[in-house]
Length: 117
Image 1 (cartoon, one colour):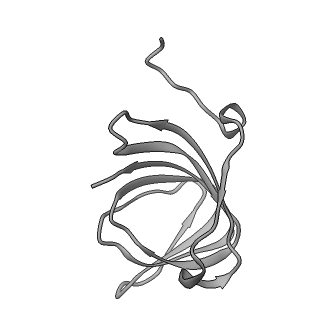
Image 2: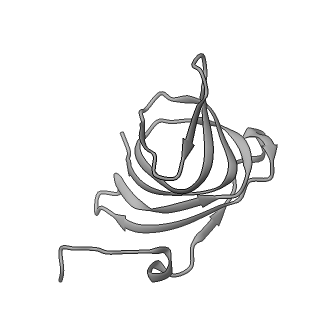
């Protein structure tokens, strides 16, 4: 068994298709595709690729997440803070306690690592 995992959406197979809960949607009809590449045995850490079509929805993070956008444009609107526009190549961390609106302006794809707290 190798201790190195290389992946792309093409090598991960069919994605999981989801959408934000209807009561959280602020605008549009966002649809998500997730290619989870790795889940640790304790289930507390995930890594992979996520993609969303345009739209906006409320988020309330209880987990810690590191992201790098590989395509698209997204605006994160943290409650009480100025909006932050993110483009392909941008990396960021969302900490537990983040509340606000995730808006996908142009279909966005990101690499993610999520740690459940």
